[in-house]
Image 1 (cartoon, rainbow, N blue to C red):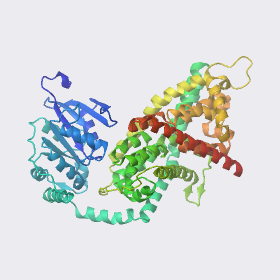
Image 2 (image 1 turned 60 degrees about the vertical axis):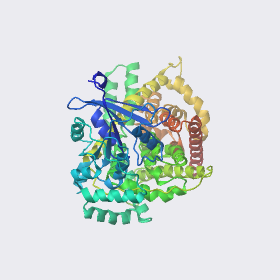
Image 3 (image 1 turned 90 degrees about the vertical axis):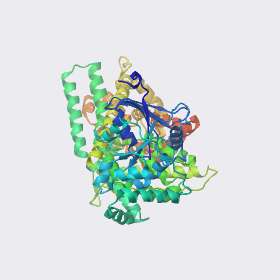
Length: 619
């Protein structure tokens, strides 16, 4: 039953809390698919609203507000949260109930915001999310004492579990809690800190060994020399593993794709349908799916480091380096998110308070090596870089991949440093943050994260890449070659015409017409370029060539200089329309989006040109 069908108005509930406290997981747990996502009028901040029926039949309308650290807004996200809670946001009614979600493992930070929310004088409940993680670490929270000290109800939840929100649902079925007693505005941050310490002393028991262990580990992890070395080693091992661990799984997928192609090719009569299935779908989609193991291994490392509490420390450690480039440690998390995809990375810049730093981070985020580039990198490295050990220990292919990721990072810092000279205000804004305690990553949470990444990747393969593969097959098949034609049929197709036209532009960087064709669908999604190459070569080769794998095929037909130039192109090229659309939406500026296209394309062409010419000299 929907909220509109009820004779009584739905209870208006707002989920409020610091970023990364589990609000959205709790929102998803409560609403399921009964939610809608839009932007607030006039701004680019996301608005999530859902509805559900409580176990006792109560209609609830729930709003997931942007994460905020304070009602004294220092960013657009925090301003939206403040205005909605205070009832001054146009088009939004003031909530009937505030649900203040806090991370039970980091109450010292989250209780500061709880105290601010309490002063609004609204009915309120505090939700101790991730309470299972707190218990595993030996943190004991007396909910009754904490509720008595705050003057509001306190319940525990585990948003990622099926029945993890049962206590909150039971509370929503009862009468609304009374508004908390009014308290004066604190005179200073010292008063707030004193009040938080009082609450912790009254209701929370922290294991002494946890704090002592954190301090010992931080002396190494946050050391200005050893900490940076540790970070470099972790990143290096991560990229070594991407090639070393994934190889058996990739071989299995390649074998399955090859078997499917042979099976259909043997049992189907020649014709357009066989060409579409074998040369289009299997050749195109199969060449992309094969890289799923490498993407999952990359995210296994990222999720594990995030779960362990290491990533905020990496941000803190890199703050001084990033300030030198015109950024701050606040940019680290958005830029790290861009290793998965630049889209969530750019959206994560909303939490950066300074507009100057936010714009710079948005402009350099596409230079981070997103997972969509990985299939292209893996294909070219596997085809042109020999699989051998360096110094008896390191995988050469992994070393090259590490260099490509470092090239993206160095390029981002260099661009940010260049942009610094165009600003009027060149003052630095140091990073202030509270570091969470170290914890052993939860296997289930990591597994869920990997499943989500696999689902997103396969969904992308099944939708965007499938559609583009079929379109490319059509362009590569029609029109048919004229009578007496001697060249492969694809030379006379629409795709062939486009490729030969673009080759005039890209000849100075060593790109042939097949590569030029692959760059066009790559505008929608970078990884489509691999499937496009597979389709183009399947349709332009002999029967033996069609049966061969793509990597040995291009290794036989391209020069090393061309392969290196294409790698350099993909380090910079803005080949993702979705990323450009998000830049336009987040900055509300066509000029910024156009500037991104111009400078990224220019850098890509320049890098490919220099790489190709230098490689020719040495080869």
